Amino acid sequence: MSQILQLFVLLPLLAFLASMVISKNKEKLISGIAITTTGIHATGSLIFIVYWIINGYPVLDIKHLVLYKTAAFEFVINFYFDKTTAVFATVGGIITLLVSIFSRYYLHRDEGFKRFFNTLLLFFLGYSLIVFSGNFETLFIGWEILGFCSFLLIAFYRDRYLPVKNALKVISIYRLGDVCLMLAMWMCHHLFHANITFSQIHDEAFIADHLPQHTSLFIFTSVMIVVATAAKSAMLPFSSWLPRAMEGPTTSSAVFYGSLSVHLGAFLLIRTYPFWENILVVKLLIIVLGLTSSIIASSIARVQSTVKTQIAYSSITQIGLIFIEVALGFHTLALIHFAGNAFLRTYQLLVSPSVLSYEIHDMVFNYKPPIHDQSTGTLQKIKNAIYVLSIKEWNIDWFLYHFLWYPFKWIGSKMHFLGKPVSIILLAIVFLFGVMSFTNQDGRSLHLENFLTHVFSLLGLLLVLSSFTKRDDARRAWLFVIAGQCFVTLSIVIDDNVDLIEAFIYLSGITVGAVIGYICLNRIKQVDNDISLNQFHGYSYEKPKIAFIFLLSCLALIGFPFTPTFLGIDLLFTHIHRDQPILVALTSFSFIFIEIAILRIYARIFMGQHKKNNHPIAYRSS
Image 1 (spheres, rainbow, N blue to C red):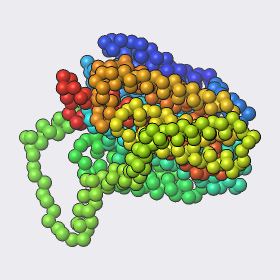
Image 2: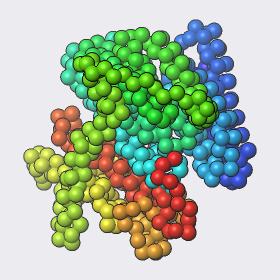
Image 3: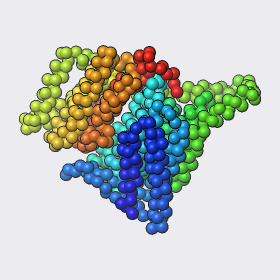
Image 4: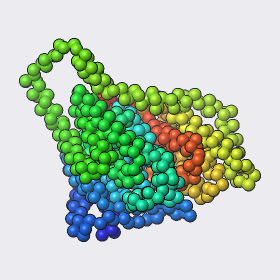
């Protein structure tokens, strides 16, 4: 029975690879692969669950594949099956099947038909990895795949301004959640001195042995998990990204932001529940987070003028209640609530264009002006204040920009002097000094080692932030983010416990991606001698092959799961000690802005409205 679990992940992987090599003109074959795959997956899930129940519904835990192993680290693909997996896998298979069938007709003859189904199958692979994952490493592979698919589907109409802008906004929030999940994995490694599985987390005796001695570390890990789930499920203060994500096709909105992806935060809370169930402050945090998100999202949903925004905030309202149910231990109720909310939001989003058409038709012929309330009491003033705040979505976007992103953009804007020749020479000298210090480990003191570690990490972050705000030349921004990654790597490997092969694994992916990406940017530079980041260029029109190759190089730099960079990031994080809070904070911020800076370069050069007038000019919004 355990061996069958692998097929539920292998099936969407094979389907995705098959769909990639099919010509974009063969719509029936492309959609047929997606429909057949999701149909077999959904049917197979139901049959497997029946067989599983007949056999006494045992918890299945299978160690599938060891990708890398050292004395202190083991990266294992691990699969796990229990009632939570059963519900999420079944609901996911059925909804993806329905959306695939609907999309076959909805996107017929759309220019991005093949792109949509490629991304949908990749999403289904990531979703399957998450719900069948048996450890944090396997879950994180699917988590990263889902984030990338979100970026592609939100920016599906890539010739328009707002979809591309909102895709970058969403991936920024996702990346914050990704890094928080990495920090949770990092602390778990230091807590248990091993890469633990979910079956170990569900062992009460195992957790009870470690909790009394490391309560503060358990709280830190739990808070990181909560932040990661809040970012993925659009809880406060991250709620504003969900309606912005609706810029993609209605079908992707249904499967991603109405039903499946947006509920994975609740899935992670259920999966890690034994880890934090005895920590009262964490349970209260989740309850307050869920309750506050539900109340505010409900008030916003009631006054929105667009149907997708109403559905998005209505979904947040229900997910907030699911968070409360999970925190209180009502997991069966939470699973039922998830299934009901997922099917309802999928239905609402798929029929929303038709319903909107009916409503407009009815309004034209049967319009009745509303009766205005003329009362001016205190209660009415409070209602009016809440109404205005809800119309403005409680200024969540403004809050995120000014308190989360603007300080880093300000710092990056002050770092442009790093691009001057003198600064580049000094940085090269400092880097060479660091390399020499790494090779001469016996000749340095512990204090010098700590000092160099933090200096190199800070320089890496400043270079990345400079790339994040740079606008003059995409190639310079590209080189700055690569230089930042080299400094971040050096800040960690300068520790004498780091094996050189582990640094090589990380840098090998970066080097290949950096060289290929720079060549692609040079090719674009030769077209009209302009690759500034002050505007969108939209070169995916004229250079689709270069755009695809450059996207692959971007994925290599940000650590997408098919690259050695992904494994290297996990390896590097394990070498940061838990008594190095400044180093882990600087490294975390660097990894957040590395992905944002790299995808920003890709979006500005290859996406958006084409700057040449001989191409059709799209509206700003979909």
